[in-house]
Image (cartoon, rainbow, N blue to C red):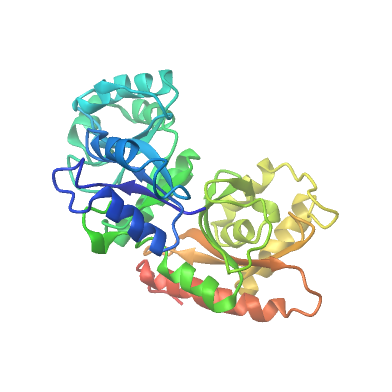
Length: 356
């Protein structure tokens, strides 16, 4: 199921232009199954859904309760609270980030920075007050307390999202993506290329990023008759037995790649899973040479996947795209690999990468 994880409504945000019911209709039209209502310092948009729409209409659509909270010293934070939890303090802007994290976690919620490299004074990394209050070590401890980081924001520049994705990788944080839409035309801009590719090929297509020694699925689009797979948006799988993970690792700096390979516990998932570092590194060399990677039924016995790397403006690998389907002995997986590689190059160019 696909979610837009940063949505501002007319009922809740002063600059919001879209009523929540219209928002839901638009997202459903685009194939989304849910949304996070993240109005600024208020749950008014969520309350409108709960009081007027919940259980009456759109019963097949999930609405999560959230707030984009304006902290005293760390810019805007996305806060997601359990259903039924009412914390009016989240509608009173200006708490210090340290206090906000403690409150959210105490009441079972999760928290992470919105657009961390975005507009000055509104974003975690660029906020002057955070820089003044936290030393380098203190900043590291702060970042380690976040449950996720928004790594794709449709309202931000491409290079800003690339930096956010790298920040998530650095601290091993799951990444979220959202439109941050305040206007109707901004809704659902996160994944048109991936969606079109899935429709064109009639296969399941993923986009994922690295989180320490795992791959995190950021986008997933399925054909009309979807395959059965354990991979869903937000879940993790090991790097060493996924085409996404291999595509990313093959294009990392060698020193970083080898250090990461040393930490991997090569546990077999099927009888075809690579189970030692030597053979894994040999596999990565082949991936680097041909430009795409295989998961040859190494994670799930019935699944064959082909993945290729996606690069940011600075030439560093930031993620990968993959295509998955039930294994067929007659399928030309090298041909599919070349198609996936071409689509990954397109995505890289859209992100500002000017290389080959």
